[in-house]
Length: 332
Image 1 (cartoon, helix red, strand yellow):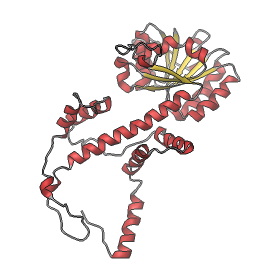
Image 2 (tube, helix red, strand yellow; image 1 turned 180 degrees about the vertical axis):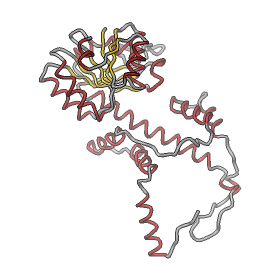
Image 3 (tube, helix red, strand yellow; image 1 turned 120 degrees about the vertical axis):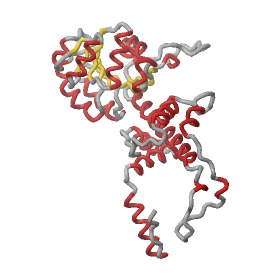
Image 4 (cartoon, one colour; image 1 turned 180 degrees about the horizontal axis):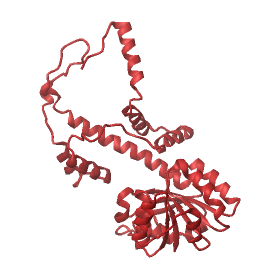
């Protein structure tokens, strides 16, 4: 099939390459001329403007957007007048599913099909395949299945006789919005998993607490039995051994072990962890549904804390302790 890709960042560029490997004809556009030229060298047809991009696609056109959620509306606003009835637009970024419903209605007025495809796989997707969570009309999704099949993992799990495409790495989750809803929760879970690894490794990192001298004063809780915390552990080696046969092995652990091997103290990181929105939206959905999400909420708030957003609250606590008990902050 022929497909156009707008947005040639880390994932978008690798998706074009994987589609080309699958025999698809790809037209590529990005604001970065360098990115376009790189894909052209890999066999894609490069376009230098949106008009040239659309003109290079044969109707009915298929356009895949891999751009930040914040600029999807801007790109659609420029793209829509160039498209025609029967064309399809796929948003493969991390858009909020609320926005998908609005955009689908807007595109429907022009006879343009809109699909939302939550895309996971990151920079490893080129070789490993991407996991695709698809929302949209049944007929359109079925028509575009060759594209999804080429991008996804492809191989069924051994012994799987299911007719579902899920074991091949892509799934039509439901109508418009369903794909990004599923991807939203996927990313919320990712926050929780990452936080669990980070907290566990931090406990291991401080297993030598009994070896350090500690001040004995009213402001510092004593270590009950220092003899129980005398371990200087090789965190990188522990992360590596967990990768092999452990029930908690995962791609996230693989990446963690690799990072610790390169930089055991992680000195190249400041520890200020961003959140791109999906974690917040997941918690908002949980609130609306009335279901608890303790771990996912704590993981999100931990990211806020990492960026210094709890500093004023901590100062308030210190002020209260000073006021009611004369407790001065520790200088350490």
